[in-house]
Length: 405
Image (cartoon, rainbow, N blue to C red):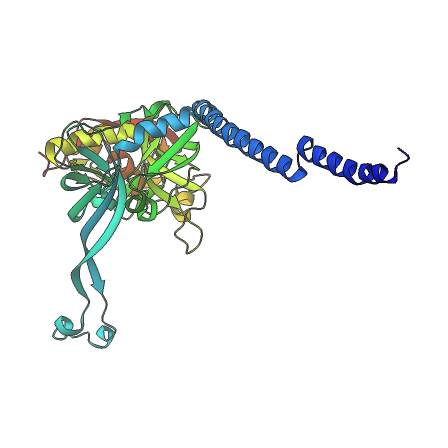
């Protein structure tokens, strides 16, 4: 080892041999990272598929757990709910601004008020009540329709004919040609519970045409037996109140309970000020009333309101109340008795003050008419009257008018 040449050779070659060996034994850091990254990607891709499959399974299970009475009711009823598009004829009265200057009858044809017919387009909702295509909606939706088109879930459109309509109760019956159509289950509106779920389905703002399916809103039954009185030539009594949102186009659609039964037909909303949008108060006609009216509409095309009680009334004002010694102003006073009519037979007299009819307080003739509009000849009206400082009960049997005989 003392030889300088040998020491030089060792010093020169050993580092080269060691470096060459390390290059074979130790893998470069870069290679390690790439292989590790590739392994991680493969595992991630594989586990992502497994995760997606797991999420799908969990989603299916979650979908089942998210189903409840409301979703089941909606799924059950939706196929039988329809959107309705109507072309109707309305009478428009035009008041000539110059008519006030021409009172002479000669000028009336030229400057007087004019009435003309105008076609208008309207929309609403309805629901199929039988597999052969009978559809219920509101009279104010389709009662004056000259061209009626219904749209069912899925977007299919069908022409409907007007079977019959009753403006007094605001109920209308339509018919489309078909068989084995989806139809609703009619419930019992006498069993409605205040506070139970209420589901409104329909065609608000024409959204049915966009989505090919009804829009759903949910609330509760807020009240029952609501007496809203007379609006135009329609009488709204015993209405169901709900806070489920109802807007323009919802009229005629079903109000449904959590069992998937129709308990009413959405008809009216209360609005705030000049607005026509929903503010929390919606009203539906009870389904039990609709059942009775539909029977007549199917048979006769109308409901015959040809009944009479045989007397006339006027409201009790403060002067009348004082004259008869009443403690408060209430009721209507009988102003005339028709000879040979039901009132005369029942013993009603001119000057009697009617306080209640069939248990409902009355303060105008329309209050009595609202009770009578759902009755027929032979039905009984039970009056509570004030006569000579005493309260009496009188039963009156309704009769058919001369036109109805």
